[in-house]
Length: 144
Image (cartoon, rainbow, N blue to C red):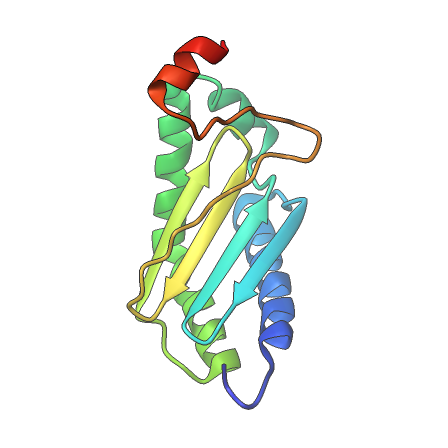
């Protein structure tokens, strides 16, 4: 991060900018924004960012694909502004940018990197449990 701002300060300011930009572009304000900024990477997650209509559309595979395509196109035409804000706050240019849309949860993740690989793991909501076994395939067959 730049000596001008701490990682936490950059994250906080970028969260506000991303929230405003998403609301202006789509007419829908995400429920929350999470920004994780390190020396090499900035990841912006817009929680519950899909409109009610997009959530309904995303219930089918074809609809979910359309929602993903729309948000990828929206990101492509609007990410330059967010890139400029990241550069302004960090003093560093963004080398790469990508977007991941999760229609089932309504999350949209923007990743801006400086050439590193970014792996994003979205956790299930609190209160939802999923059983995962790390045993062998024989264990899985007998544990059911």
